[in-house]
Image (cartoon, rainbow, N blue to C red; front, top):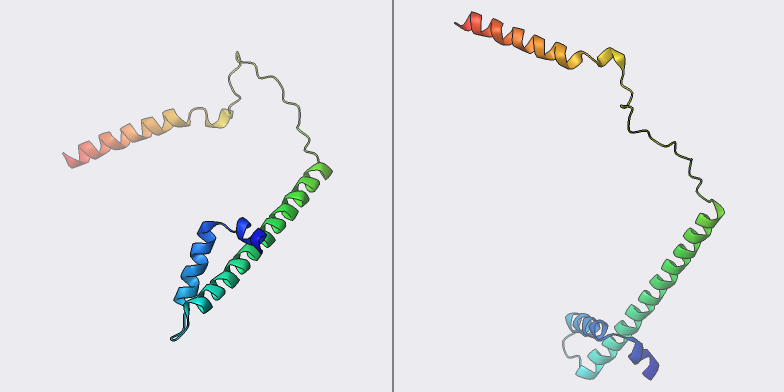
Length: 114
């Protein structure tokens, strides 16, 4: 029992006491509340232990899966900095076309509004 107390953190003990006091019935003695708190501490410790075991098992499974399916990187071609990136020829004049159309629209709006 001394070993169990050594592994239970003070925060867990405080949480267990808070829960025990929150669920305390009228006429319940301090000794009974303390026993309930100890039971809650054991439950919290057991829960944490199970969660750690589950996390370890998931980690082992993940590592095993990574080893089973090694990632294959495709070799990259060296990029030459002297060549610009390829562009689609059909959209090469689109910005200029949009600029001209917007100016025509602006001039038409100015003439009609004046």
